[in-house]
Amino acid sequence: MPALFPRLYQAPDKPALRFGDRVIDYGRLAGAAHALALEIADAGRVAVWATPSPHTCVGVLAALLAAVPAVPVNPRIGEEELAHILTDSTPTRVLAAPGDELPPALDALPRTDVALEPEAAPRPDGTTSAPDENGPALIVYTSGTTGPPKGVVVPRRAIASTLDDLADVWQWTGDDVLVHALPLFHVHGLVLGVLGPLRRGGTLRHLGRFSPEAVAAALEEGGTMVFGVPTMYHRLAEALESGGGGEDGGRLTAALRGARLLVSGSAALPLHDHERITAATGQRVVERYGMTETLMITSVRADGERRAGTVGVPLPSVDVRLVDDEGRRIEGGDGETVGEVQVRGPNLFTEYLHRPDATAQAFAGGWFRTGDMATQDADGFYRIVGRRATDLIKSGGYRIGAGEIENCLLGHPGVAEAAVVGEPDPDLGERIVAWVVPAGGRPPAEQELIDHVARRLTPHKRPRVVRFTDALPRNDMGKVVKRELGRG
Ligand code: MCA
Ligand code: AMP
Image 1 (tube, rainbow, N blue to C red):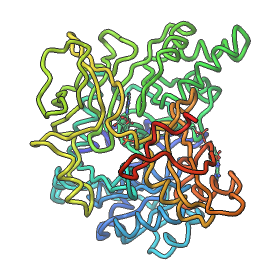
Image 2: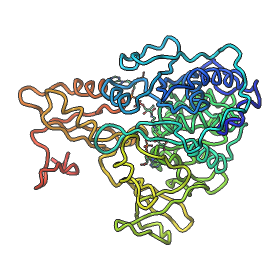
Image 3: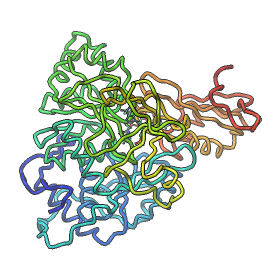
Image 4: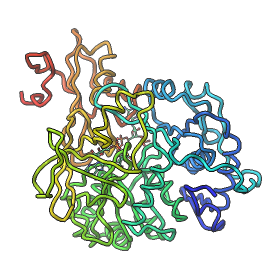
């Protein structure tokens, strides 16, 4: 019996996945994933073309059943970022839905189409050896402050541990129907949003694309929980307000009021949006805090005080400490002293792929250094107040390194110098702003630079604003002083 999915064979007729009108029950899911697992058993690593579709779920599940590490790939990925991920992770096969068109670099790999209706697949007889729970399950690419994204190696035990901790703090069971519209190539949408329901024996209802209307409809039809990034809750708050007492606003209000649990994560949910949702629906959104490298770290408990503006308390299996600039543990929980969040536990990643230097730097005596700055109050609640590095931007819940965008912009012939910063944005949390010194002559058009980044990296990394300047502010060492940008 696969340890990660003990409920896979328990209730064959129960819906496991729903995308639009397409419902896949557990019997079909287990059959499809098991048949695919047998097909890919000899692969070294597999890339999964991670569209928001049941094929992505079956592909990743099959890889986990076969104990073959899966590399989820953003289907909007640009050519440079894709080339980097493929060179770094060297998948030997790509899994994609039949008919999906792949970019040339992926098309060059042997391909297996993910079938949702396979020939009857034999149920595993339990004689195959159990996979190493410390072995790699997923390799998830995520940005650092400089350079191209790093491959975070997530072991099987981290997935099991984080999902069981969340089941405890959210009373998450097989009766839950989870509703979300998150992308399936990051931890939030894939680990929590797909593997979560499958480990519990519950149901995922994926919306394909986020809209308040789609959330309302899915909740009306039996959804019990919603997962989203703050941008999505901001848009729900806006819709609740603009709908007023009207038919659609009333529908969304009633649907959200009826949900068992609304969960926000991946970035800070502004207090104002918390309050607007509570005022309209009576619901208090539960916030949790995590990272690709650590999976989930803290959460507000569903059965505890739903304190807005905090990310709650450490999950049962996770050790959390705050550390000052000298590396000393901050004791006491006075709610004021700010320190770096450091984490220890079974939820941690094992390494950055091919980056022993970066892996070593990320740890201090066995504790993972998150780079997030927080306070802890007397009741143990953590509050995230910022990040150590200003060069990591969170936009729409995506983590984006300023350095990779600057490097990409410098590859454009019209750009002599570039500095990228995150500016506060009511919808995205932070919006990417690029300051550019043109390379003489006429400056390139703003849209041309935006498209340059979108095409090479990925659309969510594109600057939302480009500002041209004659010179970047620099200190005596010649380093750009980003906090002086925009001050005239
Ligand atoms: C726009 N588009 C373009 C361009 N401009 N395409 C090519 N070139 C361009 N120049 C396309 C986009 O691809 C997209 O296509 C559409 O236009 C709109 O894009 P965009 O404006 O970026 O969308 P948005 O409205 O800003 O999206 C908001 C969002 C999104 C839906 C909230 O940011 C999102 O899904 N965020 C989730 C991030 C997430 O899951 N993070 C978790 C990381 P089309 O319209 O066809 O779609 S894991 C994590 O953080 C940890 C573990 C944790 O704690 O969870
Ligand atoms: P990622 O690597 O995309 O997994 O992003 C992880 C980062 O997202 C963390 O280091 C935090 O900075 C941020 N983050 C995640 N959840 C929250 C939250 N609830 N509040 C504030 N920041 C968060």
